[in-house]
Amino acid sequence: MNDSELSRRRRFLARVMAKRDQERREEIDSLGNRPDFRDEFGYFLDLYEKTRSPENFEARFNRPVVATFCLLAPLELFYALDIQPLKLYGGSPALGQLAGPDVPATMCPAMKSLLLELEAVPSLKSIPWVIPTTCFWVRKFFDQAKFLGRASGSVHYLETPKVKTSALAQNNWLLQIYALADHLKTISKVSLTRNRLLAAIKVFQRARRGIFELLELKKVGKVPLSWFLAITGSFFLDRTENWILAVEKAKNVFAKGRGDIKGAAFPGIFLSGSPIHFPNFKLVHLLEEVGLTVLVDDLCSGERVIPRHLAIGDPSLAGILKALAETYFLGCQCPIFAGSERRLNSIYQAYRSVNLKGVIFHVLKGCHCFDQDSCLLVNRLGKAGFKLLRLETDYSPADAPNLLTRLEAFRSLISSPMAPAFSPEVGSTDQPPRIGQRL
Ligand code: SF4
Ligand code: SF4
Image (cartoon, rainbow, N blue to C red):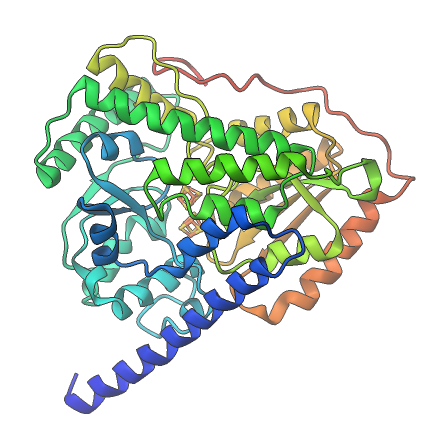
């Protein structure tokens, strides 16, 4: 680029970042001005105020920061090695829409948005990455960012097998976890000991408990989706120990709430599909506007933010690493894996224990794995009599009126007194699987 092109590009970036800041501000204000806002929730909003840049994180946490995607890299390993994991996704509609012609038009908006953010926040350029090879856009993200001159740090790929049932895949995955531990050790220069790992596990077990308690309250309508996603979305923005304390306080506030779900007056739904990232809460606000209450979700930005179960049988270092590998791989419901049984089972299981009236599938345009998987699930669940709605959308506000109309129609359908009572009989126990077990 010559000088004038460069200064034009800088002005453009300054404009989009101002837009991004405004979107963030508007969403923070909208949450802060809700009648159900309580002081205890301010902590989470404050986290979104802070700049998401490596130097900011390193200054706050006084330890190296490593960027990652998705849910496959065991967070306990990062903590045990004194590294701050930073899960990066783009939630900014402005950045998603203005990513430019260098980026494939069909790319999912979460990745588009992040690609532009990498250019606008120069210190992100040299951050080291751990990239699980999950969906196509995630797998090729670093290549794309590097090609565009927006990534120059190191990258470690966590090669993720796509067929969980094969013994070969499970063994390979365990080797991947060992390789990840070795890689992280070279960044932190800290040795991985059993005691360090156990201490990290203790922190994350408390986080699991905190999330689990929130989920129990969410199931009875005491935790609105906006707050739930604002809380889970901030999981990576502070040290987990601080975040847990804030979740425990917020949970006490929600527990005192009235719990709005009383049968058909506020139909409870299961929300499934592509992740929803702050500040793009378009769908969340529309759901709340029409009075559809999400009691259960399977979003990797929501209930799945960390895997739910960790069962350690063998307490040696090798045994603990194996347990972590099992938890993060076999328990994952991400649609990149062959087979949709775990996603199906979690819907069946939720219907058995929660007062649910329907399932909404959220598909981000360009999110091919959820696109394909949701078609499959809609067909299978539809045949079994579930009430379903599949919504395909992006980060643009333009389709909001159309989405609202469809959500209103769905609400009428599932609230109708003529709707037959429905209780599916099939289901599964959601026990943690073991490596070597057939799923
Ligand atoms: S659904 Fe899976 S691949 Fe997609 S963003 Fe979440 S963890 Fe990553
Ligand atoms: S799974 Fe979907 S939303 Fe997540 S990065 Fe891949 S394409 Fe984007």
